[in-house]
Image (cartoon, rainbow, N blue to C red; front, side, top):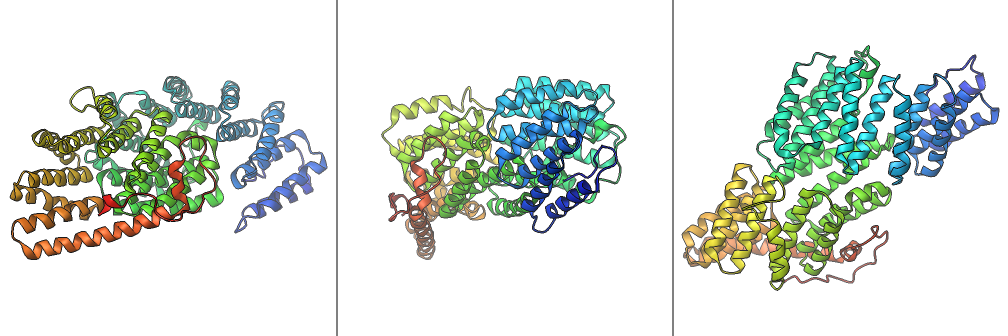
Length: 597
């Protein structure tokens, strides 16, 4: 916002006029940013006092940063605002807002080494300004968190919690305490979450702050459960979070202003909180296998993001958009919409091209998604290359385990990579020393063992692993793993000649796969049902299953051809450096269709 509150004596009419025009152009629909910038630049023609000069540089930097792609010019104005404002006494708002925005821009440009000393200096000189001191501490802690330096982040949050206690801000103190949970291992977090939940519920503050704090705490709680792969256990917390965001959206920010300046701190704007709640709902729906629900909430979140990004280019909005797309891409691959998934992977590439920081944080995920796409179109060599690239780029343990599990499935399908396969399986052994605490990933590791035993003809061993997967997936409503395990068990019983038991597995697998919907499991189940019903003498059912199998085959085949014909299909060859900006058109499918039929 172009702020007209300028602290200098007898403001000149030219200044107020230019500022009024700038604000008019900025808030026009659509905003006329070029004209707004011209008005603000005209202020310098009058050789204004230092306070006006510094504030105008801040306003220009802010407008350019939030509404244009001219980050170099925005940076120049913010650096001038920061430099000049340090020479002016009692000019805290301009000084610290310039420092905060400039460090944010540095991070976006991947200039972290410039952002850190700037924030440290601002923190050092802001101790008499509680709101800014808390906000800048959070900002530097967040920066350390992005670099996986959780020790430094938690040290800063500890300082913030103690400072908030000294200045009497319980609200800001609890925000700091909640974030301290990030340092803990999953097994240690549960008792701390319970304690924090009690503290938040018992805290007596104004309604907006209390609900904001509850959203903050519940987001941490929900993501903790999702990281642990506990899809069923998270449901009560997720429901509370959804109710909480409905409550907070009905409250007005200006109803009750806190008397303590340190309490003015907000961890996230209300509009951003709404998108964040949609995002964690999508994450839950995808893990649980409610893919139509995931699609519904993704559409809502992306629509909200588009509206917000028209007025606000905050980097967190692009991060939300990328994470939403990452999850919906995985859903599309399951539901048999590979062409759409590929176009959305390309969209993530374009978003990452606009922000080096975003690409650094999501490069491993991008290669993982491309690996999953390659599996879906039966390009196994490319899948291996993509997963190998992702492993090289990630330091996140859960993502590492997810990639290794999928790479193992590639080696199993190839059938001639025994040494590499056994090396991988040793690292994700679900029976002992599993590397992560995720319930979902451990269940998936049992499934991979079962799949390998099936291909090797060791059916009793395969059944043991798959029953373990079923037990774990049923305990936490992991519907897709349940469907995959049931159909594979059904296949094993069919091979062993136990047609009744096979039917008892395949029928519920088909029902669950239809509910998800999982196109590959439906294809597999319909093929088995066709053969089972033929063996059992059920001619009509066998014909119906054959027709279903034909329909699924045709749908997958058409989607396969559409995906492989897209110019974006060439992304499967990209394994190093930034994502390519241009794609050459394909002449036609380049991968085998045999696995689909």
